[in-house]
Length: 347
Ligand code: ASP
Image (cartoon, rainbow, N blue to C red; front, side, top):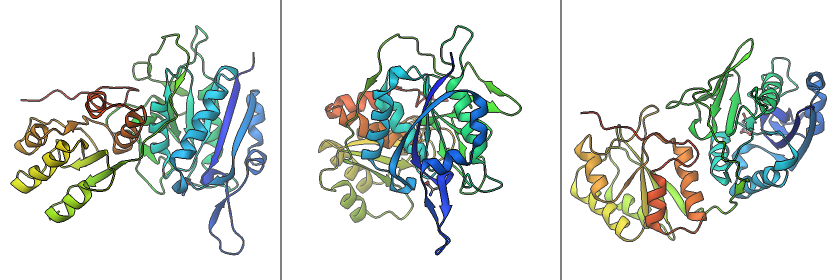
């Protein structure tokens, strides 16, 4: 049986061409993409595609686009062995995180890829990324079951868990990195999977998609010099339900009175505040320093080692389920789709 793969083409550099007048890159359609990768035929897979009309630069990605992608996968889930989503790199990690939460009980590969250079360019990375993504979407264990059962980002030499990855370079071919979780596979002469790192889901349950996302969430960044007036203004934003607070180091913030008072007052008003670190590696250990412990005591929830992309989309997803603030807080602290590891407190 030939592998049956569905490509969802959303846009991004991979499918762009140069506008002859402005010289700026703009999205083009899928026919052009396939014409430029005749090698795909050598894979001998059955490949179908769904495409965005028009394809978009991923800086235009929005919740409604995530719903469209999730629907494309959910509506075709039983008919395909795996899914490849072609997507711009700019917001790829957000889309990967959102889909990992939206596609509950996912037991098939959803491989997101794109490229730094358009597929029509001589030195493009798009051709290799697309072909490798298709091979990973078709990969089977000896038992015949899918090797990858999660949303993952394939880029150049690595396959990363989607909700653990971050775009780290605007021009390097290895544009993504997961700072707190190993690569799911390394791509060299062959594709070498790390079976310990891959998600092990064998629950035999049907896909349980959830398409509702609540966008009443936002980040607040700490920096030395943040003033009380501006902090309170942000925390009092109309209808805000959740805040991802980007803190220092192991989850620390100022220990001064007005700061903790403003945070505690927002928590008491029912705003859910999630603590994630600004550091690229490691995570929040709230009782390690006084600054983190004050936040914990004020009712701020630890985001452990979650990426910002995973944290903000997880909040959208949990509020989208219609849960109350206490239940959102509880679920923020536990892994839903492999997005966090609870970091033990080091003495
Ligand atoms: N701006 C482009 C996008 O995210 C960049 C890329 O695809 O690499 O759609």
